[in-house]
Image 1 (tube, rainbow, N blue to C red):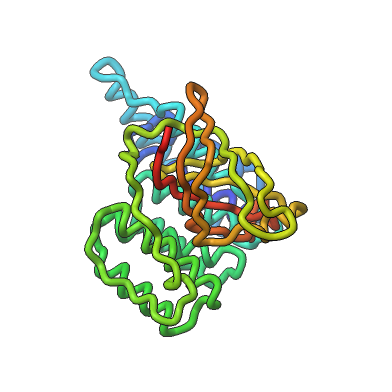
Image 2: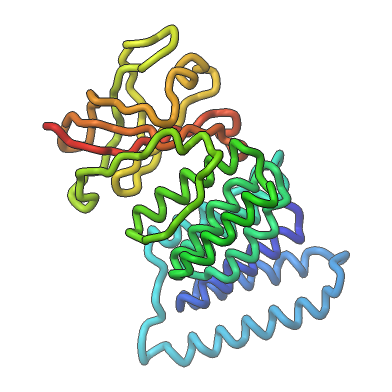
Length: 307
């Protein structure tokens, strides 16, 4: 991340903190920006930038002083601090704009949808980040209850062929699952896509009652290792959906699992229980950016719990 990108990321983070009433955290970030500018003599419009940052710092200091003794300024929760730190520190040297992706995701997670969409749109020209940016744009529009617009945007992407077939199929799978998850009645065109050959089954599980899953075990459905049982660690869980990472060196494992596979005898491990059930492979994609670049992400929808 060069100096300009770092200052921009810090500025976005400071504004995000201020928007959510985290004035002390915002003040600290603006002071960090001021320090960066003062330490570099060759910054364009340096004096103007310093004046602007100084004004923001003084305004924040006065607001904090005014609140002191009347009410305590809100503090960032550990989860919020962790998310902001993770998103703004995301940077892959091989993927131009990756730090901007991290910042945009942070903005979206904290409800700054317009600013987030603006950032995501800028990243649609970056091959390594285009797919993630598009999915996040659709998510932002649905979060604001603009479902019809999200569908129109998706159809526009299809018609203009902005994305190669494998990427538009991935977007369609993601978008369809997101629409279903939110219980929206939207018609999404899938003609001509490979993904229409398999209809994702509905889950019988109330996601509020589902335990946090640490790992899963299931038999491989095809390939040289067909029938062999493997155990994968869960890296992320959202309701009925769990995601795992398959290292690129395990090529046979990756190729033996395809979207649309239904595992009827899965074992789920949580910290307090072990139970069996069924899972549906909703997506399998190669990771194109970040520290896991070259590995594959596997997403499984939990359909049924048997015992």
